[in-house]
Length: 63
Image (cartoon, rainbow, N blue to C red; front, side, top):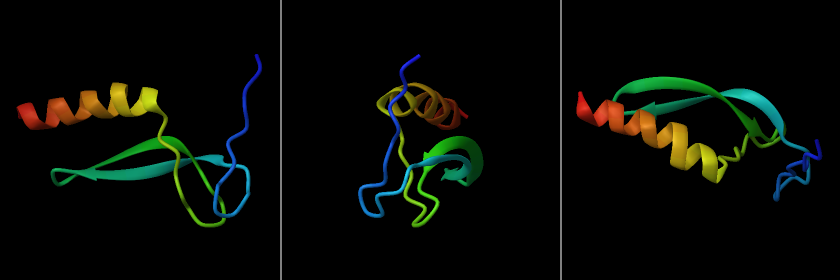
């Protein structure tokens, strides 16, 4: 498998996988996301945004 390393644009540090909290409609959700160990900037892939996050948004809005 040939994985590309994600690098923080601001700090030029490799991103590390860490649990990131998301808040939506009064609910807190945690998901492992690549993030910068220096500044905390996160990378949300298009797949995650269009897939899992959209799925959770729809479930929350339907309630």
